[in-house]
Image 1 (tube, rainbow, N blue to C red):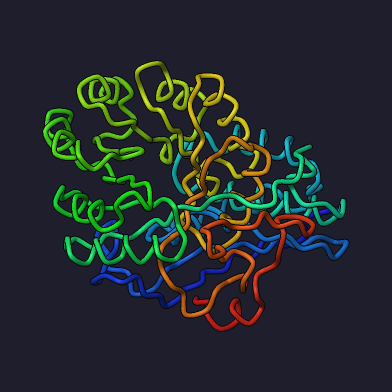
Image 2: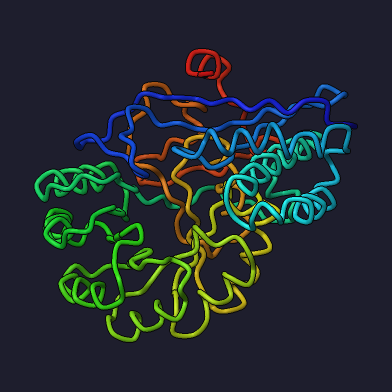
Length: 365
């Protein structure tokens, strides 16, 4: 079998999220944008993958088209490990993180999809995992900024069955409002998106004391400073989470060292796909950290994360973006049930193919 085509598709999906206009990286989001790649083979088996994502899609798409695809055309898609190793070495001059790695991630997910379809097995079975019927999802709310609206959305997520809610807020008043709204019905975490210095975070963290957070995610700038995270962890008794911006075992080991992060969050669309995730997860677990992957996606990245949840049964949650798409990419396959759990797909490969109508309607140039 040989890879004959690598086709990146940008999907722009209208959405609502219960708050005002939002976005990251200096751009307001009017749509949720995803980079989905379709990999074709000479035997007719097709796999789908996803690379990060959102504002950086033009760069990731260019890396996939101009750099990654030419290196793998004609290769055997079932040789996933050798392909990953070859790309790691060929692409390291472009950085161990960033668009080239995100493009590699997209390809890797598609190759695992092809391998599972060829074998007639879901990816988690290929990896030797026992069946895990479903996994808890936490509702990951986008930034809102208004305490009353934050409280309403947290309460709405809890009423929908989610037993954990994550806020993307930096105002302690918003966090307090959410806790008062959900009471003991849902666990709370906060993602600060690298907002503060150590001194600033210590002050803010003390104001979070009554919120009873299960974790505080990426509170510091820069996010890779493991020593600064240890300083914060020693000063504020809130478990810390980080790792979505880490892409190497060395970075994960530093974050997960004693006194550092309690939760490690590899992102399957950033770290080299499933192959990269497996390498990082092994290091995180060896250091006693808990895996809670970064997965605010509705495409193949979410399916791959669900497959990995079966491989790592101690993974307590997967991240589910608390937003409503005009039309879901996979129909009901990735929709949580009334208890906030998502079924681990059992069809071959990643578990489902994107709805072709969605690919056609929402694909943009």
